[in-house]
Length: 234
Image 1 (cartoon, one colour):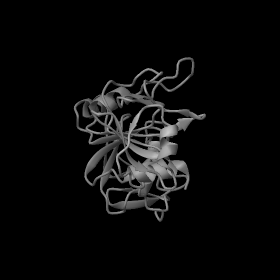
Image 2 (cartoon, helix red, strand yellow):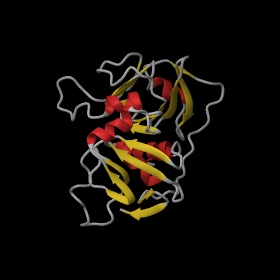
Image 3 (cartoon, rainbow, N blue to C red):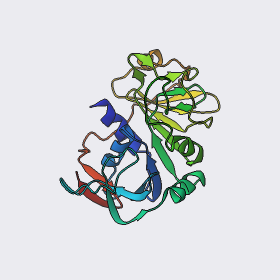
Image 4 (cartoon, rainbow, N blue to C red):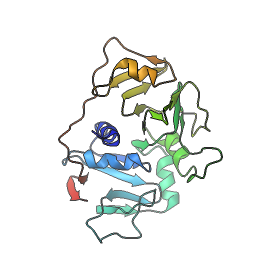
């Protein structure tokens, strides 16, 4: 299974019906493809939409409907178009149930760095600082390493997005939960040994006596974007 698909499928298991969820750019936008068809989840983008769906079909892209990364999206019946003040009021007011973000680094205290690489041209902070600080729950979906170097570090070398501790890290190798005691290894990806996970992680991991295998549904096709109890083909 492709690493990004594995991560997206595992993160999808964390979503609950009736929740208001923000998707970061990149890998997090894959998550809705792997939701059950009977699950009602409402996706919000900080640029001003609640109720994102996939584009209805080829040639039906609407320039005024995009996600935070500028990609075309559709809208479910009853979707809301809101201004930035209202959108960030939802985020800063603690009304988002969950945000799913990509990551450049996460440190041993569960703090995320995902917005800046000194000397590189990147989109910038966007709403990341507000999302990590304001959402009820924060999941980071990212690759475990970059160019062979660990992204889960003892201390972030990049500027932090927020000092708040995130709730969960999902990579192609593992599911890791930041806690008061440290980073706890909760699940290992299929076929990945614990020794391989610890070797690819700079931060110290707390390894329980039993670490279950990450469970994902290999049958989910990933060609549907399920929202509000309806399915829409890409």
